[in-house]
Image (cartoon, rainbow, N blue to C red):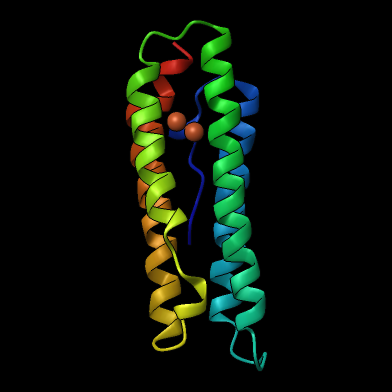
Length: 129
Ligand SMILES: [Fe+2]
Ligand SMILES: [Fe+2]
């Protein structure tokens, strides 16, 4: 469902590896959400949603450290965009996901993956150039 495509490759090994991992986590979450035969899967789903959030934060830190180390010129735009997503996903109240759980989780997944795709294509790809 959430697929890392060749067009997302930046050419920076660590960044690409982390981007791939983010899509993997998103997929694990989606697969678990679609699983019909596991009763009470919401603890697991929440656990992966937390992992997706935390890994996104870790990735931003690594990416910002890398940009700093190479004196990347458009770092300000990057950090501004990273901060916007940090704020959005940092404000998620996972305890509040009790009604329409499937929709809430799908919405969060969609937000992160749409954001990532746009950000990778418009910003992250320029770091490797
Ligand atoms: Fe970035
Ligand atoms: Fe990135």
